[in-house]
Structure formats: structure tokens, C-alpha cells
Length: 57
Image 1 (cartoon, rainbow, N blue to C red):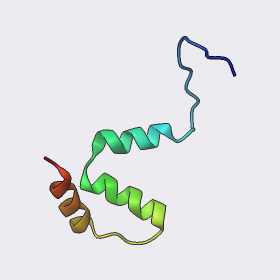
Image 2 (image 1 turned 135 degrees about the vertical axis):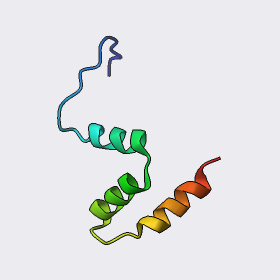
Image 3 (image 1 turned 180 degrees about the vertical axis):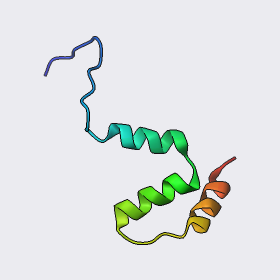
Image 4 (image 1 turned 45 degrees about the vertical axis):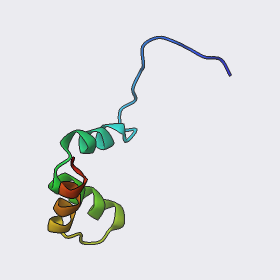
């Protein structure tokens, strides 16, 4: 395998935009939406907010 350098060409629709948006947002609402989409279950936003608050230095 060869190592290449140069500009990174991003493909549209590879999922990175969604994950980067979640990380950049970091709100309880965004994390709750992600958890609900991922688990296909309802998630308590207050619980998510509590976890995020506890994890923030």
C-alpha cells in the first residue's frame, strides 16, 4: 500500500458530515436525536443533558 499526500477529496453522503455536525453542535438536542435515530428508541433529553453537563469540565 502506498502513502499518498495532497488534498483530501470528500465524497458526499459518506456519513462524515452528519457525525461532524453532531460533534460540532454538542447540544443535548442533537445528541438525543442521534441516540434516538441510532437506537430506534425514545431517549430522555433531560438524561442526555445531565450526562453532557457532568462530562463538561
